[in-house]
Image (cartoon, rainbow, N blue to C red; front, side, top):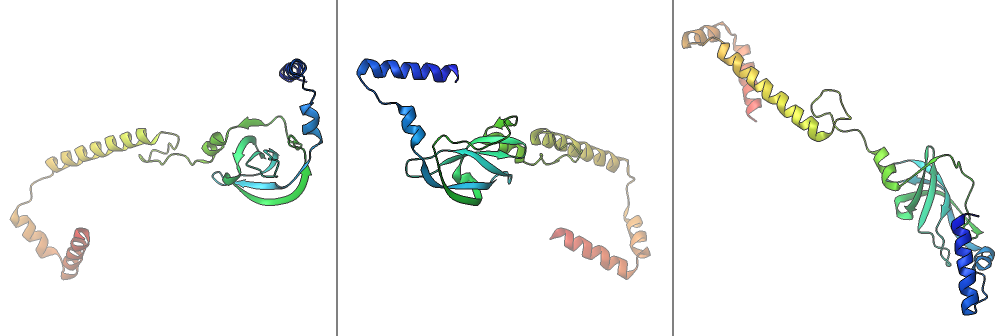
Length: 192
């Protein structure tokens, strides 16, 4: 028995003695078994992970609102029934504080942490292969890369020789009718 349990029992017995109560609440909870439908295998809706419940809340009427579920790698406490897809269930009876066998060495995490594990890596906005980089940083890198490319294109434009009308006429004369059609069609599709 833990120190906390011992302290609570001692305090409870002293208060009961002081006020004249003689009810033992532990005995009341121990003897009452409640019949209910209990999940045996579940899937967490957000993460898609499958596991089996090891503990749950249980009202006097047999209603369950939250489960503690053991997944392959972790145990997640206090998952709302609405967040689970129940794959297999059975009707049975047990006491309110009953707990199934489980691997006690597994890490216990919150449902939020389980959701974080299920989230995909960040998009690689800047196409540098780093999917761990935050999207904000990747967006800034992508913007910088775009600006650099625009500057390079401007530099190349400045370095390119000027083409005069006579040069354009020579180029047009050298093209076939099929090539001209192809150029016009690609320009029209670009404008759409």
